[in-house]
Length: 255
Ligand SMILES: C[S@@+](CC[C@H](N)C(=O)[O-])C[C@H]1O[C@@H](n2cnc3c(N)ncnc32)[C@H](O)[C@@H]1O
Image (cartoon, rainbow, N blue to C red; front, side, top):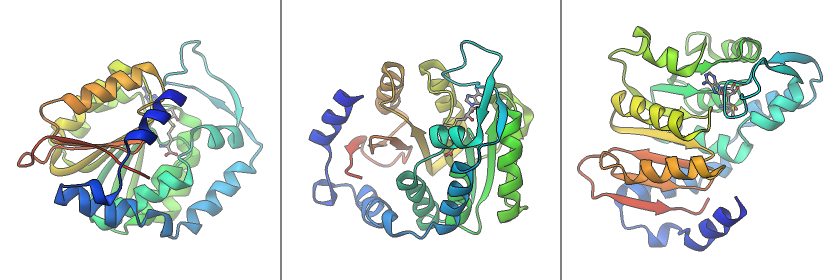
């Protein structure tokens, strides 16, 4: 990861090096302004989670699931380990606000921090968020329903089973945020699903693109895919868009 970070630092560019009007706008209106976004409401929720020492039964469906059966963890430890950090949460909020995202899908609700940023970034957003672990899903759902009962649906189940269900047949999203099960094959499967459920101006965001060798490989394959015309590496997040009319380009952007 350190090697990947050093490589990222060496290659990243800011607005001056961007020759694509679409990416130039995204850089100036989203990446540059995200840190100014007021997300106090989400930070209050984060603080509550960080101070919550209650234990729950956590069943890990993702990359750390090999031992199976799950274990007992405190809410605070789950929030600290799995919740999106403020810097990237603000980016989510700024993106959905600037591009007036209406329909969004999140893979991996955890305790609802990422979902909270998405909902608070744009009043019109309708979010569907998927989570395998029942106990965290219930905590997240309770909080997210307080923010916008009609704007959010938390569905509990295993990602690939849910994604294959009729629930998503013919549904298109403006944004798909993939933040769970950071392994190569599942990530590529979620990418295929995403390509079939987005339109030309949608965004797909992958979290933890440099987290492991597998994720590096998945991310590199996604960027090389002919169906992707714009890919952006922000180190933690990788953002891809189809944008068929555009020349295929990859950007490593300073954030
Ligand atoms: C990193 S956390 C999500 C954090 C959240 N998106 C946020 O921004 O705060 C990943 C979550 O995905 C869930 N998950 C991982 N793999 C899964 C799978 N195959 N099916 C269902 N849930 C899964 C885990 O249980 C975990 O809660």
